[in-house]
Image 1 (cartoon, helix red, strand yellow):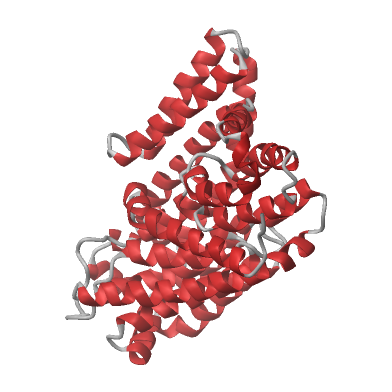
Image 2 (cartoon, helix red, strand yellow):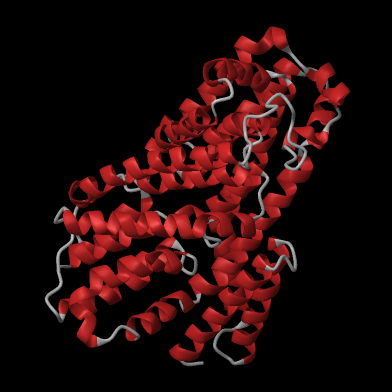
Length: 445
């Protein structure tokens, strides 16, 4: 197959998966594996790659996400143990005393926690810090988990511009400059983005309040089942460990601090945390087995989804199909529009984020667009800034970003609902950041 046909196969694969997910035809794991297998079969039957080569692509793709899958399994177990032990009930009560039925205050709190949590530049760790802490509060106030996710991903998208964040580092490497140098240019747009993130929390807090959130706030929401509700109320009562509250809070804080500062795999941190939590709170093999089984369903479901996404990414990325897709998209930009390259790519960044993983976006599409812009005297840095800032806004709503599945899994939200609720708002945030960059002189043409 030639490069054009490979690119078309890539577009067809992604569109089919998105359609299946949005129409709720099947679960994400089956969609990723089924459609990717058909695409892999086409690559083999056309003689483009051998079975062994395709197998290598899939192996590499799964290897890239297996740590995220392990992270999800043990993070679900850890926070499940903390919930069973009653730690979050105490935290919720303390928060409720501070904000009461103030829905807008809870929304602001969500945004601030997400901003602070994303200082390490890790999407998975931010979800793990923010969602388990805030979701029970949202349930009691009858606020939608989709709103929790929207506030989270907006704050995370802005904070992901830090120089140690993946996108900024990738763009800087393509430009051949230091990541810190690129970040200093982006900083004014990031400051505007943080203000927008706080406004997002205020606006959607008002929306939730108008929907009736905060009324009868002591009642549980029956529409959104938490992971910990897999056990009955009586069982949860038996599992509560109020005398170990101080220990559990300290253990949780230590785990979070280790996630941010300790240079070890995140899943290892949760593995050790689970061991300590189980041994202290629930000694005895029989009780420990019961706890693990009670949280195995949600953990297994999302782990299979993440691993299946690895199959999808492996087939398209390792075969360089995504790079060919980038070339095709670049060809659609008229030569007469070359001077406006930063604006064009800034406007299109959010839709493109739904199709391209981070590496293919920056290592596949960015070099092509820079070369197109060079012929018209466009500053490569300005093209890169537009791509980094505008793309980051949509990072954690993209189905090709593994951390997205971690977030929706923790929140108990379907990916189709997350995308439907967040896409247009996040795109608007992206466009506001782009306009701010133009007005502040960060981007010129």
